[in-house]
Length: 204
Length: 204
Picture (cartoon, rainbow over the protein chains, first blue to last red):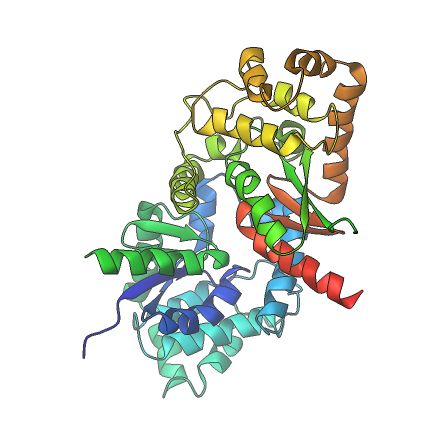
């Protein structure tokens, strides 16, 4: 038995469109014989490169209004609960570090989805240690040990390196799907990424 | 026989993603029982509202690089010829005024597609009167009369009013599909717009 070929999903916990992407990517990919590898990054440093000190959805309110309505429609289509967070964007640093403790771990997808649910369906503050802990309960054996580990210098470095690698790939927003050197930016590009990956596979 | 229900396609001649949108929208819409109404606007005034004095694809080169590659993939998928214009964005004012002479005219879709082809497949300067004229030959009876008419104050006003209406609808980019009060931004949202319109129709 060989491993299914992998598509990277680069995500940030504060990013709105990453929520439906993280929730639907695995199912859609599996149906086409692909596996999703969750790659956490921080948008803050990437946005600062563009001269932004906040989410573009806050900096440009007309884009923000559109995005929230669009997200509403997308979540309704995907049967995903959505409650507009009372704070946006929320700081995803702590959760992103947890996601870096054990890269590509089997528990990671479930944790990622729980954090998104906390942020975008329950309006909970994912910067809060207790909230992140709740997202680990029942997902890993020892939530406290994992939280503890997420504060280690090498884990912090891993997240920093991940974000730098994302930038070097040409990533400027989340979610971004990556197939080889090809970027597909946006939740709505998952299908295109899979189509591209399928064509690659059949021509190898 | 009743008229097919209509979806507005707001476009700008200088906009890259408006090119595949303008070329494929009618066919996709017709297959689902909808008609596309071409609505010209100018992005310049909308971008200035956001503080931009150029295309965001020039202001943010990392986004520009992604966009050109993405457009390449999209055009390949749609069998649309693409030659990256030597000047970007090109000034679509003259062509947009021609598109405002006779709003919703039967010849308009063909003219629109010809202008996009000139800009994005032939690398011709669509700001040039001779190029716009070429796009009218064989499309309207009297290209010169139409060009002449496009300079009339009421036509200029019509384009200005169109752009103001777009802004008041919440439009901030092109292409944007509009169904009632719902906006769908981007070439890739045509299918979502049509699905929404179909649901609206079936629940009336």
